[in-house]
Length: 84
Image (cartoon, rainbow, N blue to C red):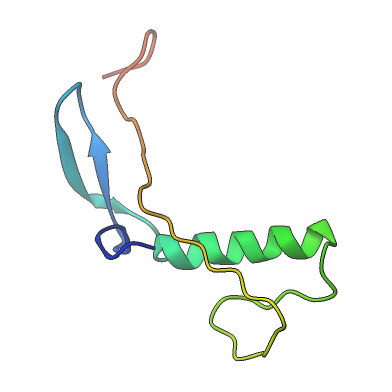
């Protein structure tokens, strides 16, 4: 997870040109941890590998997947029929 997107607070798009930090809503866990766990779970369930370790474990492996997430988006503009 890129450092600028590793915090819990959300940055939301509020109109066509404005973004704002939303400190009243936040991720329960840092997004990098959440995405890493979800990717590992998906890889494990896909059955492509004999075993899949969760991020942060010290289990040695013959292959390592490193992923970099640079941006997460949430569009909270009101749409047709949605309250502002």
